Image (cartoon, rainbow, N blue to C red; front, side, top):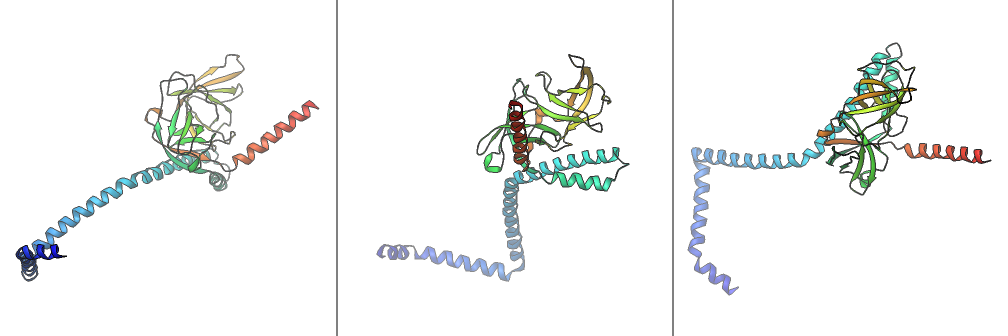
Length: 288
C-alpha cells in the first residue's frame, strides 16, 4: 500500500495532466460543432471497419453451413428435375398424383451433407474419403451423390470419416435403369476412362437409343430412384450375345468432386432383414 501511495505521489502531475486533457477534449468535442462532427465521423468509420471485419469473420465460419445447404438444394433440384422429365414423358397419367407420390417417397430419405477430403482417379480401385462418420449418422452401404448425380457407396466408416467406393472402382456395382423405358442393368467401370462406365445385362428386347438418360432405379435400397447417372453414348452386344452392353457418359465430374450428400434410408435395415429372412427360409426349404 505504501508503495502505491509513493507511486501516485511521484507521478501525480502526470495523472493530473491526463485528466485535464480528457476534460478538455470532452469540452472541445461537445461544445464545438465542427470538432464534434469530425469526432463522430471518425468514430463511425472505425466502428464500421470493426463491424465489417467481424461480419467477414462470421461469414467465413458460416461458409461451411452455407455450402452444405447449397449441396442439399442442388441434389433436391436435380432430383425434382428428373421427376419433371418423367412426368412430362408420362403426361397421359395423373401428373399431380404422380408428383405427390414421388415427393412423398423422397421424404423417407435423410440427406447428410459432406465434403470430399481425399480423392483418387488414377487407380483401378479408386477410393475417396468424406468428412462424415457414424457420429453423423453415416453407415456402411449408404449411397453417396452430388448435384451432378451418383458418386458411389460408403465402404468403411469411422466416427468422423467414411471411405466411399465410387463408380470409378472396378469392384463397384450399382443398379440402374434407362429413363422412360424401365430396362435395368448393373453399372460397372472397366478401369480406364474416368468419364465412362458401362451398363450391362440390358435385355435384347429393350428399345432405347443413343442420348437416353441412365438413372438409379431404387431396387438396391441404396439410392432413391431417379438419381442421374449419365447419358447413353454407344450400344454394344454383350460377349455372349444375349444382352446389350451400354456405354454411359457419366454426369458426375469426379475430377472436381467436392460437396456430396450421403443418402440415409431409415427403412433399409428392416427391408434387408426381411429379405435375408426370406433367403434363409428358402435355403432351409431346399435342404428339406
